[in-house]
Amino acid sequence: MTAENSNSVSRRGVLKVFAATAITAAPTFANAFGLLRGAGDIRRLRMHSGRTGEQIDTIYWIDGEYIPEAFKEINHFMRDWRTNDMVRFDNRTVDILAASHRLLDTDASYLLLSGYRSPQTNAMLRSKSRNVARNSLHMKGQATDIRLQDRTVSQISKAAMSCSAGGVGKYSRSNFVHVDCGDIRVWGR
Image: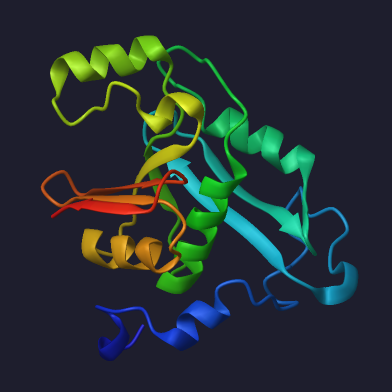
């Protein structure tokens, strides 16, 4: 990423978000079913969890179709690690994460701080912080809290905001960005 692009998202970058190449579709991903079918659009999610030590690096969408097997892995990865409860994670949030990651032009994987939260976990977190919403989209499998080791909160939030697809919260003091597929809105510093 050049210095000129480090603080803003360019029109060219937005246009490249879902442009696929054969190189992106290297056959090292276990769930890349129908690899290169029509050489079209490919979407990928790369994350790791400091809480569980797990990693996910999967192609979950090819040529206009979501891959059910990949979403089973994503649902498991995004589970509430405190209770092991799991829901079907919303594909729209995953799409925002993938698009933002491509805009950020990095090889680093996201660090997942929070994906799905059971109502019990959300209530516990809410009792400890005023920043946890009573009806959090985390409880619907529609929100994540993430960070990237080589990008700032500002850079990540700008990339997510450029998708114009959901909520983006900047938590600079805690060094993470909230991304969800709810109403388009922005908050935080």
